[in-house]
Image (cartoon, rainbow, N blue to C red; front, side, top):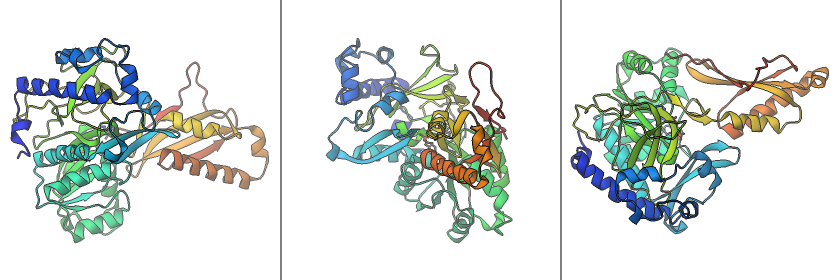
Length: 433
Ligand code: DLL
C-alpha cells in the first residue's frame, strides 16, 4: 500500500533532480539563519548558484550537535517567529538542549512522512493505534500521533509507562497497532501475569519499534511472544523525530524518505564520504524544512545503505539497523543521556570526590542507570541520615537534568576502580537479546 505512489517509487534520475532543486532551496533558506549566514561567508559555496550538482554537497561543512547547542535558542531559526507553530527540544548538556522549530508546512510534511511509513506497513483508518511513547518535548509522542491520526486511525494518546493502564486500554478499545520502545515491549511481557492479562484478550497485530537501538533477535522475540509484526522506525529530533526512515511490510530495514532528506554515509574519523554498502556515520540534510534547515547534520548513528532494491517497489534507499554511535551518548529506555550531563550534576556538589562510575544494566527488561560516586572520607564519619539526604538530593538532580531516573550509590574514597590513562566512566552491562 502506498500513500503517494508517484513519489515513493520515483526513478533515481528524477529523484536526483528533485533533490538538487530542493538542496538549492534549503541552502537559500539556511542563509537566513544567523548560524549559516555567518558560516557561509568564508566557504567556497556561498549561494545556491554555487551548487551545480549533488556532488557539490561535499563542499559544504558538517553541522554538529554542538553547533546546534551553540545556536540555542534561535540561532538556527530561518523564518519570522510568527510563522513558527511548534518547537521540540532534545536533551543536551545542562541548560543547552538542541531546539528545532517547525512551521505549519514543516509539521504537515513530517506528518505525511509518518503517514507514508505507517501505510507501508498496512496501517489503515480501521486501526486503533495506541501510542505508548512520551508526549511533550520528546518527538516520539506527537510525531507518530499526528501521522496515525491523519491516516484516519483511532489514536489512543496513552503516553509512556503505567503498564496496567496500557493493558486495560488495549483490551477495552481493542487496540490493533502499538508504538513503543523495544525495551517497553519486553517489559510488558513480564507484567502480563501480574495484571491478569492473557494474550488472547488482546487484538494487537502490529508494533512500531524505535527510539533506541535493538537487535534483530529482540524484534523476533517480541514478534513471537505477542504473535504480531514488529516494524523498525528510525528518527531523531534534530531531523523532526520518528519517521525519518520506516520499514515497509517486507521488514527489510527502514526506507529513508529521500524526497525530504539527503543521505550520506561518512567515515566518522576522516569525514570522507563512503560508498553505498560501507558502514559509517549517517549524515542527513533536510530538503523540505522551512524553520530549521540543516545541512549535512552528523547524526552520530552508525549504519550503511542497502544497495539491493526492496520487493515493495519503493525506490527510496534503506538504512541498515543502527549498530552503534560514534559518540558516547547512551540511550536509557529511549531517553538520550550524555555522560557529560551526569558529570556536570555530580561536580556541582562539593561533597563529591574525584572518582565516579556510570553503570547501565537491565532490570525487568528495562534499562537501569546507576551512578556510583565517591565522597570525601569525612562524610562517612557523620550521621547516616545526612548521607541519605545527600543521595536523595542527587537522585532528584539527576532526574530533573537527565529526564530519567537513576540510582545513586555513595562510596568511600578509593573504593571505585581507577583506570589508568583515560578514565573509563561508563560500564554498559546491557546484554543483546
Ligand atoms: O528517539 C525519535 C524517535 C522516537 C524515533 C520514536 C523512533 C521512534 P531522539 O530522542 O532525538 O529522537 O533520539 C534519536 O535515538 O540518533 C538513534 O541513536 C536512536 N534511535 C532512534 N530510533 C532508532 C531505531 C528519537 N529505530 C536517537 N534504531 C538516534 C536504533 C534509534 N536507534
